[in-house]
Amino acid sequence: MTRGGLKKNLDDGPERRCIVTGETQPKVGLIRFVVGPDNQVVPDILGKLPGRGMYVASTRDALDKAKKGQFSRSAKAQVQVPDGLTEEVERQLVRRTLDLIAMARKAGLAVCGFEKVKGWLAGGENVRVLLQAGDGSERGKAKLWTPEGARYYSCLTAAELGLAFGRQSVIHGALATGGLSDRVVEEAARLRGLREIDDGNMAVGKDT
Image (cartoon, rainbow, N blue to C red):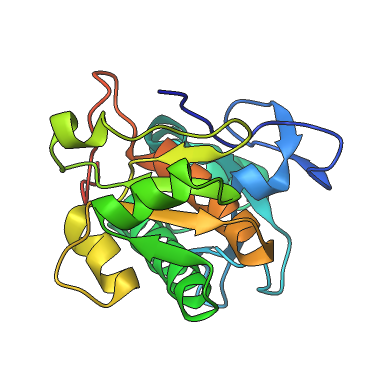
């Protein structure tokens, strides 16, 4: 099964440098932070808050290192890093991703359930994203495939996908090609980077 994520190309837009790794990459794959009026570091998931932005790669390791002095060095001032910052970033990314999936569903660009998703894949529907719950059965998920050019994400739980589709839980979902689906790709890629841990499993709601 093909596993796709956010790839750097000429269409990824403006680039920014991560204050932890020093690497320059498209800012859509980074988390923006600003210093608020109370001198606290604030995550800016939508990239719209006023102030000078500080960008960090969307990985748990990068955020952990940023909290240990990189924010202050980048701001050139002593700033306060709130407890649970990584957890808050994760919460906001989950909410943003689910909101976009829900919007795609309401626009008729999304289906859920094994048979409906399989029907889209087999029927030639132009699928942009295949979503499968990280805590779903591996045997069941292995029966579906990611079409060429599509993206695959398993960084959401069944309960989280259920919220996006208006159900108690969802294991399989698919999004058709469209602007909303492209935005899901961007947010899901950032969330996957944050939730990914060394053994390939998913770290949910853990802050260090």
